[in-house]
Amino acid sequence: MYTWTYMDRKFIGLGMTALRNNMTQLRHPYKLTFSITYRCQSRCLTCNIWEMKPVNELTLEEIRQFAAKNPHFRWIELTGGEPFLRQDIVEIVKAFIGASKNLYIITMPTNSLSNDGMILEKVEQILQTGIPKLSITVSLDGYRELHDKIRGIPGNFDKAMRVFKGLMELRKRYKNLFFVFGYTLSKYNQGMFAKTVEEVRREIPEVSYNDFHMNVGQVSEVYYNNTNLDIKAPREEISKEIDEFVRNRRFRLGAIPAIEGVFLKKLARYVQTGKTPIKSRSLDASLFLDSYGNVFPSIMWGRKIGSIRETNYDLEPIWKSNDAEDVRRLIREGKEPGNWTACEAYQSIVGDIKSFIV
Ligand code: SF4
Image (cartoon, rainbow, N blue to C red):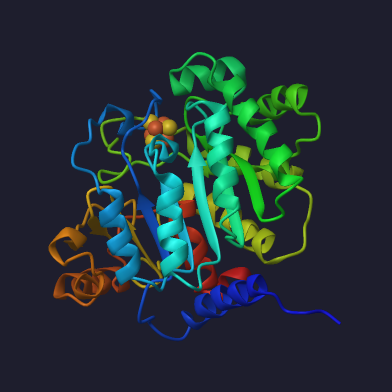
């Protein structure tokens, strides 16, 4: 007889909360996207985060206070900059795991530029905390020369390969580890995805299209800080690339592949229209917290609604503020800037169940 584990319960809890969002506004957000630092060693052509010189970012002690006072998260995305540049990343994760008893998944990207031994060591330490699911996205935007050119760092492709191979080894011992390559489409790599997969397969023959997550390069004032950059490829090119990507993926059963399928289908629509393809769940299911403690509806909208440093690290007064209500009204009226990023899309998809069929 199958015995339900605490992991199953947390997964079901996450699913039920997301589904409940179809019928009602949630009392608390269940998804947190948190930039733990804006420091980054890349020199990406598509993003200006690396040019920031952040000072006075949230300390570990402040993050611990925030985690303790806001224990309702079920899904946390720790992003950057480069999250592994925070020496205390394992302690940050532990702070959230200790406080959010229903936490099911932590997701994190990496540019693979820190020492790969250190990245893998920290990943293993996080896995040992008992988090039901840890998902790492290894950024990869092209074949060897192209990736290094887009990222501005010679040798970055090879480092990404080393990290991915290291994750494959870890996966043999930790069933709670998941990882993919994260591929961001822009004018710099249009039409180059198949060649990229080919080059990766020379290093890691078992890699398939299913080992990639595809996204489209986005422009935002609050997060990427790249409104001065022209990064978009022509729509037809992006659509062609997404179609080919979808065609070459193997069908898989399960909740995550189903959501990923909807994400890609709507991504193609977003590319055509520039509009968020389904109702946004920003400031309902989710929020974006930057590394200074400022709270925004999403990584794509620089409409600050408060700072946890001004509320003693408690989100509640910000969540219930008039400002937050104003933003929710604007979202309801369809006035949120168009976006379709992995940070925001998944909770919108599950919170709008008809998006699986329409
Ligand atoms: S895209 Fe990521 S790796 Fe590149 S500069 Fe921005 S934060 Fe750094």
